[in-house]
Every structure is written in C-alpha cells, then in structure tokens.
Length: 432
Ligand code: NAD
Image (cartoon, rainbow, N blue to C red):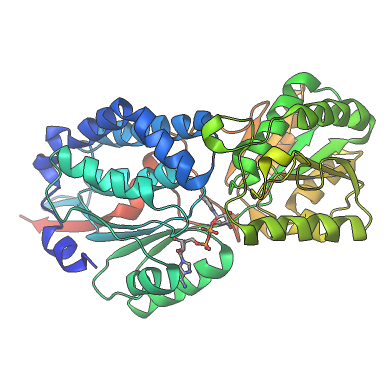
C-alpha cells in the first residue's frame, strides 16, 4: 500500500526542505510535458485534447501556487498577560490519503496533492480505476523532480479494494475524498473508525440563474460551457438553468443553436464534446432523459445518442436541453453527470432563490444580470460554496476556496483555505 513508506517519510518533505522549490519544479515539468500528459489524459478519459491541455496547465498552477506558500505557513502569538508567552505552530497533519474520481484525474489529483505536500505531509493518492494513467505519471514526475521516495505514493486500484484499504487504514492521518455522495458517506464512516478527519468533495446540481436584463449572448456562452464541458461530467457542472420567463425564448434559442452545432467525437480528435466515461454512465444518462420526458419535460435539443455512423459503438450522447422542467422533478434534483441541462422558468428573484436552494446540493451557483444589487441580493440567499456573477468558474479557480454546502460536502480545497486540512495547530504556552 505504500502506507509504511509514507508514514516513515512523513515530515521529511516538510519545513526547510520544502524551500528547495520542488513543487515549483513539478509545476515546470508538468508544463514542459503538457502535450504528452494531455494526450494520455484524453486517451484514458475521453475528454477533448483542448480540455486535457487546460487540465494539465491547471495541475501545474496548483503546484506553483502551493509552492509559494510552503515557506509561509505560520502560527500566531496569543496575548496572555505579563509572564506568559503563548504561540501556535502549524504542523503537517501526517500521512494524507487522497481518493479521486475519473472526471478530471490530473487536475483533481494535483488539487489535493500540491497543498498536502506544501504543508509537509506524505501523500497516498488513489486514482479511479476508470482513468488512473496521469496520476501514475504524476508520481513519476514528482520523483524525477527530486521528491524523496515515499512522499508521494500513487496506488491505483478499484474502490472496493484499494479505496476501502486506504479509507480504513489506521495509519493515515487525514483523508480527502472526491466523488459521489454514497461512496463519500461510506468512506467517512470508515475513516471515523480511526478518528481520521476527512474533506468531502461530493456532487452537485448547480444552478445558473439568468435574468432578462443579462447580456444573453454572454450568458448563453457561460451556461453552455458550464453544462457541456467534459460532457457534463463535472461536479460543478451548471446542470440547472433557472431563466426569467420573459427571457426564456431568447436564451433557449441561443443555447439550442450552440448545442446543435457542437461536434461530438473521440477526445484525441479534439471535438467540442468527447464521449461518456463508460457504457453504464451512458445508460444512466439515457435513463434520466426518459425519466424527464415521462415527467413532462420537453427535449429542446439532443436527447439521444448521435446518429453519426462514424461514431460507431462509442459511448456518445448529444448535448441535450430539457425544457418545461419543474423544480421537484428528478431531472432537476438528481445529479445526472452528463450533458443534460434542466431548464426551469421563474418570474421573481425570491422564486429563483427558492428554486436554487431546493436541492440537496450546494456546490456552485451562477447569476447573470446587469443589476449588481439584484445579483448581490441573490448571492446572499443562495446556499452554495461558490457564487459566480456574470461568469462561471474562473479557469481552474486554483486560488479560490472550493467546497460544498449541504450534501456537496465539507472542508475546502483550492486556495489558502485548503491548508487548514493538511496542518494541525499546536499551542505552546510558556510561563517566565
Ligand atoms: P465514485 O464515488 O464512484 O468514485 C470516486 C473514487 O472513490 C474513485 O477513486 C473510486 O475508485 C473510489 N471508491 C469507490 N468505492 C469506494 C469505496 N467503497 N471505498 C473507497 N473508495 C471507493 O465517483 P466517480 O464516479 O469516480 O465520480 C463522479 C462523482 O464525483 C460525482 O458525484 C461528482 O459530482 C463527484 N465529483 C466531485 C467533485 C468535487 O470537487 N466536489 C469533483 C469531481 C467529481
């Protein structure tokens, strides 16, 4: 499992040793190997080459960003009055385990590994058995950049074997899990047996809320990218569109034109949208479209596998828009994890807030309007870890704290907030 090596090695990568900028070297190596890594990611996962290149760049940015903080992790002094000196030290938490999904393997791998290494932890990374290749390469690159053996351990395998072994291991000190709610609950239960703290990055059903006064061209572009990027297989996908009723026609026409013009094909041919990860996931998406239409939704674009015979038996699905959706329908409530947008109309701001919050999830929300007062009023009402106004996502968003409200999880990754998970605070009190 690499746990013994990780446990022995912990701390060796920390402190002043971290000052030799190994994280920076990893960032540079990732950038230098972008084409090779992007091709590997695209072949393994099916995502368009362009997206895979972006993922590698974002992974590099994680290492660069956290390399910059490795020598700035500091404590406080606490005033206790005359005769006392009290201060805190932030120590590495120890062996940090990372269980990651298949949808953004190198990006999500780097998102957890880089801050954990910067904090001085040893790391065990378990990629998904659906797409493990770039995580394995990341391990090799880290070694080549001078990270001592045992500091970053990559352990591929299935969830039921490698995942369970890692989550229930008594010698891990912290666990970051990114994946589905059901598996997350099981993982948290296993970790709890050993009193191991966890960060849970789970699913989403994120709303994009578009008012009639928005720049509709900009909104259509943002809404389409938010749902169709990575074929909708994104935790923060904007999978619900809440549109002010009087702008419905104008916005949906724009979205339908975009959806119908998208080229679907193998990732390495760099299409607008690649395949779905597996047959099972493709069938799940198909089932959801059937459920939606049986509940009264209307297909405004897509809704089926592409007819193009050259796509053969590939696991492709068309970019899909479902209109006439109401907030309680299953397609508006459950994470589909495919290129399917559920479109719900609203008339008033309060109604938009109620619908947005009528979800078990709370990962990301987008608001599109030219009225900043309206945007801020809505931002205050929405229960979500991130809110974007007139944009959605911020590149990789490496610098911004990211994480869920409600069943989207707890703890934060990205940004400086993530370091809290990989350090623990020791208080030292001196009487003199
Ligand atoms: P998943 O939950 O099936 O698997 C995630 C990881 O857990 C994989 O590495 C898998 O091998 C492992 N695993 C599976 N069963 C396990 C078990 N019993 N014990 C330990 N580990 C186990 O998720 P997935 O299908 O790979 O990814 C899709 C899900 O991930 C979606 O719900 C999506 O929203 C979520 N996700 C969340 C974020 C986020 O940052 N919030 C990012 C990406 C994906």
